[in-house]
Image 1 (cartoon, rainbow, N blue to C red):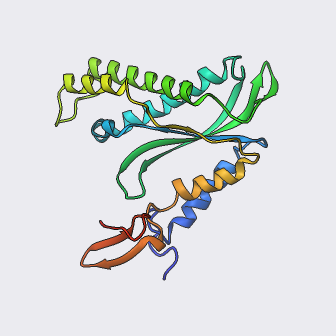
Image 2 (cartoon, rainbow, N blue to C red):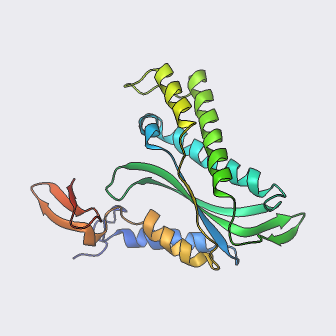
Image 3 (cartoon, rainbow, N blue to C red):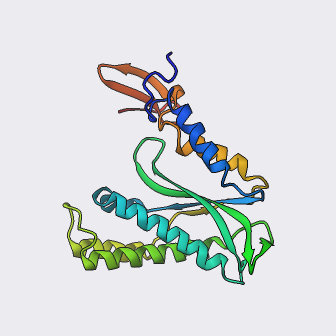
Length: 227
């Protein structure tokens, strides 16, 4: 093995330096308090739109998640304060398929009129409330931008088909995960640095490299995948 030989972030050996650089930069932003880890995932039905408009869809995902957290956490019913976040995008699943989702590290408290207010209880927000609000914001933004022509319809579809799909997605339960409170955000940050900033393929997952084909462990028993 030749550590850091190619310097590519996607290399299982060379990604460590990129991982540590990101981790150190985020540590400087981390507040000394408990945190929550929240994950916002787009349904796979939106993958065609994502491939056609990756930058715009990324912006909409960040916008939808941030507006959901801000609206709920600034409501006195849940906290009534301005919280701090560290958010990072992740776009692949373990089998390297397209799987856009956003990881957000949220402070367990926030500023209210210049005073720090602790988040009471063990959980950040009611799961169903956050999920439905995020779904509504994303659908509204997508429908608006499709109708205005800001988002072009994927080549394999029509505008009406896209709008019909978004209508069906309004009845589907989207995947929003809110983890219990972590007393120290450092541990979550280390996990995120390895998960988000490291290579998508760990060295231990590579079973063989033969004639330009790489065989990987998928993590399900003895299953493997050729890429």
